[in-house]
Length: 176
Image 1 (cartoon, one colour):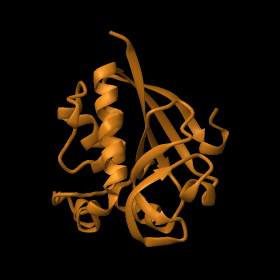
Image 2 (spheres, rainbow, N blue to C red):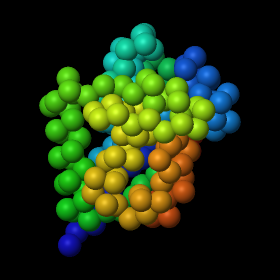
Image 3 (cartoon, helix red, strand yellow):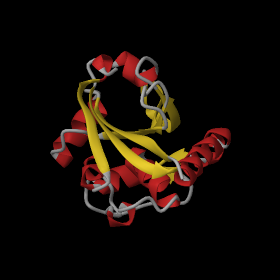
């Protein structure tokens, strides 16, 4: 069976919200996305639906040169590659496609994000913040070691995955 790769992208955009999260978490990265391709032209997450409005969030398709990452072009990232089976890859791809087609059913988990800062778990049905979504992508396909991720998941927790390989750290705009 052919092996494929997924890419988890941890980022720090420098937005007001990311600075608030950094204050509470003391973590270098406060946003997580997942990409199916090494170019990162398309990444998926839960975040701002409009790069200029931090108060309306949901399922987003992000990219190096679109949306919030285009607006905040000094975004620092850590890109991790995870090897998966073709079946796991297709399962995550289908999950992302389902979410994209049905995004009106899914919402940003504002209360979960707020409570997570105080170490309280809150995961209502069909609501996610960025790292909850990435974790759900991994756990939906039983990716190795994903069950060891905490309930109150932070982007930085993905660095604990043993099956990851860090392939880049630096400015997103410089990523090739």
